[in-house]
Length: 128
Ligand code: HEC
Image (cartoon, rainbow, N blue to C red; front, side):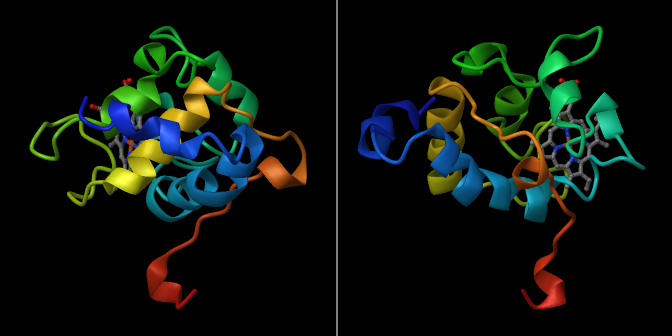
């Protein structure tokens, strides 16, 4: 995992700031359109925070403090040529985003409950 060595640069901000910044952005722009209350490909519904941590028979999608056990982390670091690589639109996340995700999970994957933790579908085409 080539991104691991650079995580120390992200000592600040803390987990919640990482969620409210880069992590939520990536999820909303790159993931929620295929993983939401109506369409939950692979059993993942990112609009249901509790289920993301609970997971299904194949295990949780995020295990706070443990990227290796987090199914979300496992699929975003796959090479885009891999059939299970996410996002499934053929355009991988950049290394800054991957570092933010890694740091966020390692620091406990703080994901606020309530409205701050609710994810919307967003797209670049909408001119955000
Ligand atoms: C274009 C649609 C699409 C996008 C965008 C997308 N996914 Fe997926 N995702 C899928 C499909 C389809 C599956 C089911 C694949 C399968 O079952 O082999 C899936 C499955 C998954 C799984 C389950 C893998 C497992 O452990 O079984 C995870 C985790 C996942 N996606 C995470 C993400 C994340 C994180 C993002 C954003 C970075 C994302 N996906 C973006 C379509 C998408």
